Image 1 (cartoon, one colour):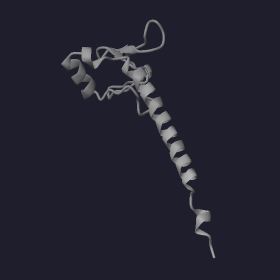
Image 2 (image 1 turned 180 degrees about the horizontal axis):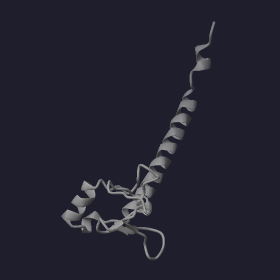
Image 3 (image 1 turned 30 degrees about the vertical axis):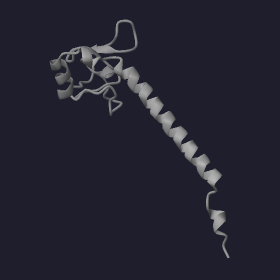
Image 4 (image 1 turned 90 degrees about the vertical axis):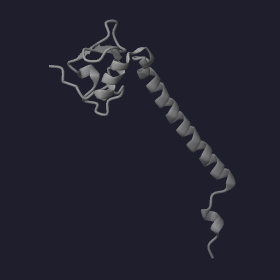
Length: 110
């Protein structure tokens, strides 16, 4: 006969597993929020005009490029920050942009 209890989780094991999964999920979300907070600091949509917001939307601008080979920092339209690091500007978009961002007008620096 096979003992069913040998293959089942005890209540303590189950609670430990749930706590571990919760801790990992919370840490992952916190890391994502920290990353987004840094990117969001580049541009304040509340201070932008409606046409500026619309242009960013039309060009599908995002603070985090889906393609690591096509980021704003490597684009011909990107102007790095004068004080080094951080947000730069774009000759197409008004306001600051993230060097790790991307839009559909991306063009390799040449």
